[in-house]
Structures are given as structure tokens and as C-alpha cells.
Image (cartoon, rainbow over all chains, first blue to last red; front, top):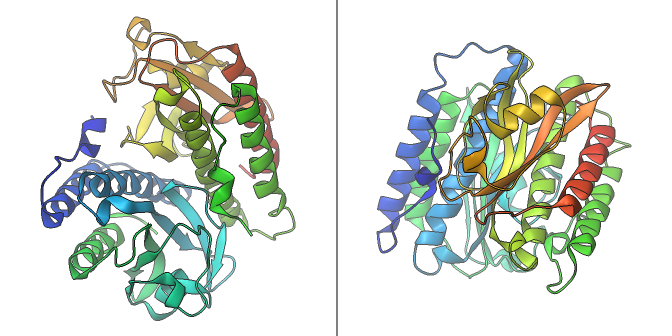
Length: 186
Length: 186
């Protein structure tokens, strides 16, 4: 059975170790669902479930790490709005309330969705067209989830410190994006 | 535009005032969506967006309140699994990872879904069939969201203190459930 302990991260571990735990826990959570039978409608609900638990894992991982990672103030997902191309719609997250939709042309999330490339932004104020949904957010990383060459969702992490993310975050969040792309129905 | 400030709650206010802010903010967030055009598929995504922001509002409201409300350790939603009657599936939440599915016959959530009645449980250990997803949870309130006489989702709040909830929580969470039932497509 899924247990909340999966969100418990030892303090004092490296970022790599914390991310490895996120991936292992996520994989274990998703694995149990492979034998389930789902309609198209519920495939969608199933990926919401996986995104909700993934946001929780990421949030608690960051909170266990030293600065600047512990200053992460939003961790979650936007998914593609199938009815309105080039628009993202808010999915599960941990943190304060967030914009319900984001156009592909707008901000860090929009750029990641439009280019299908990770955006690592050390200072959001210096990013053209940044959406200031939360004035506390100072840096951001956005990683696209790509399935069959198409962006289906993005992982969005904000940090209240400048330079909150580096190549280690990029590497491991891209691994998580790959896992989510492979194990969820989109 | 939606702003993270909606999640900021003044400390020292009464529970009624905090809940009133949750309702007002939720109503404002949902209101902006009424003019949008949605396919059936995206109606589903839209209610996920509203549930995600509602979980955030509730979480931050509890954190602004005195004990025992500040000890809330999980706030979120389960929605009906349309493909498998009498099963709930995890939706957006704030807190540690949670069970992906819950049968109508199991635990506090299952009872609220099966009976369409709010379950206010001062001590979860004393509740027959309680699902111990997080050993830290000591009390719980679960409020069904009912549309056209049918449970479509539940609001689930856990507290790490005994007796975490009272009639005030019940009253206001039922108001939120009514708002969500009316303003979202299910």
C-alpha cells in the first residue's frame, strides 16, 4: 500500500540522493498501476494521480535539502489543453495558488512547452515575458514531458532564492519527465 | 490574473474568517472560467485545476490558524473513478503522498462516498476500517461533493492532532463542496 513515508526524505543527503529517492518512489507508485484496466477517461484521471504524488515527492525532497533547494516555493505540473492548442492548464501542485492557464507564448513555462526544451532560469526577473504569479519566486526550472515528439505536460519548479537550480536538477527532473512520459497514459 | 497572494491568510483570524476567504477566493477563481469554452475532455481538466487551487487555499488557511487546525497534515481531493464504480481515485492535494485509489467500502473516505454524508472523525484509530496511509494523522473530516444526487468527489482533510475538526469545519467545507459541485463540470 502507498504510505506517506514515501515523502520522508533524510536531511543531509546530496541532491542526487534525494532525486534518486523521488525517482524510485515514483517508479514504485506507477508500477502498481500497470495491471489496472482503464478507459480513456480514466487514463486521464490516472495521470493526475501520478502527477499529484510526484508533486508531493518533489516538494518534500526539496524541503529536506540545504539552501537554495529548501527555498523551493512551488512544485507542480501544467498539462496540455487538448481543446485549445498551445495552451497549458494547471494540474496538481504543492505551494500557493497558481495561474489556471498559460499560453505557449508566455513566460518560462510557455517557452519550455513551445520549444520542448528545459528552461533553467537563475533570475526570473531577467526572463523576457516572465509571468509574476508569485512575487516571491526568484528562479525557476521548467522541464517538458514529451511523448511521441509532442509536449504533453511540463514540470514547473519555482524557488524563492536566486540561482535555485543547476545541472543536477535539470538532469534528474528530465529523468522524472521521461518516467512520467513512459508510465502514464496521456 | 490569479496571484499567489490568494493563498496568504492573516494569522489571528477566526476559523470562520479563514474559511470565508477560502470560499471568496475559490469563487473568484472559478468565476473567471465560466466564459471559457470546453470540450468534455477539458471540462475534466478544468475541475482538476479548480481542485488543485482549492487544496492550496485550504492548506494555507489551516496553516494560518491556531491549534489544532495548524496541525492539518493533508488537504485534498479524491474523485469518482468512472470506469470502476464505487472506487475513488486520488486527485490534487497538499501534503505527503497518498493512496492512489480507495474503495467505497474502506475507511473514512469510503464511508463519506458510500453514504453521501460528511464524516467528522475525532480519532481515526477508533474508526472501523480506517486506512492508515499516514501514521501521523489522528483525526479527519471528509465531505462529499454531490451533483444531481450522486457523489462525484470528496474533500479529505487530515489532522495530526486528535479532535482536529468541529461543526465549523463541517459547515464551511460543505459550503465549499456545494460551490465546487455547482461551478465545475464533472
